[in-house]
Length: 297
Ligand SMILES: [Ca+2]
Ligand SMILES: [Ca+2]
Image (cartoon, rainbow, N blue to C red; front, side, top):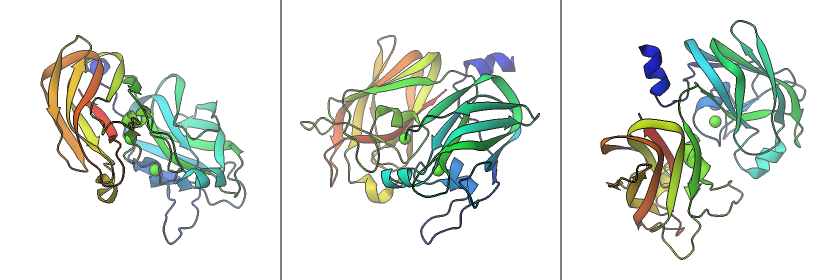
């Protein structure tokens, strides 16, 4: 019975309970680089190894607090604080994933500032995973950095996010719709229609397979910072449409935190589209932004 329920559930990330690194770069006045930065939900913070060389052989051990089924690993390679930092630090190229039973898989990452999803050869039940850096893309410094690592089980999940328009990338990063579903609080989608405050723009999430969704958790605006929150436009109201053609209206509180929203009744759907019907004006930018949308099973 439990197995059947598990396959119907939406894949939440598999929770990491502890992070240990083979070495860590010394703190600066403004930043720390310890291994817990790999799981703080922020792309702007990173683990940086502290070896004398380029970081070859450096590793991080992730603990899951018991056996968990892992089917995918997502890696944010490099230091994502900004594009200059990303170029400065080494990025992991070849990585070895070692499981609690001692078995290993080797994978090659691309040299790009984008989350990279690794699908394991087969789902693996394991209580720990050690990620070892075997090869790097050299930066201008000598230390290797990784901004975030997430783990997923094999359940249904969001397979793509698209939007009616997207603001152009800048030195802080990109504003792609995929930032809505990356599990990262300090990455966001912003619309790019200069003639609109965001009203009439939309985002659509497609699920890997049809699943029951009872509501959403939304980080509106630049929802990761009370300072930045009011600088951009926020969604005030939206129409949520489902794959069967039905829809309902939602009202979003103007707050920089995760907002729980329940549908009138649970929906079995393969897509969720938010069409924005009104917006709150930002103080600095006339672009509607949203940081994260999480589906509630
Ligand atoms: Ca981080
Ligand atoms: Ca995000």
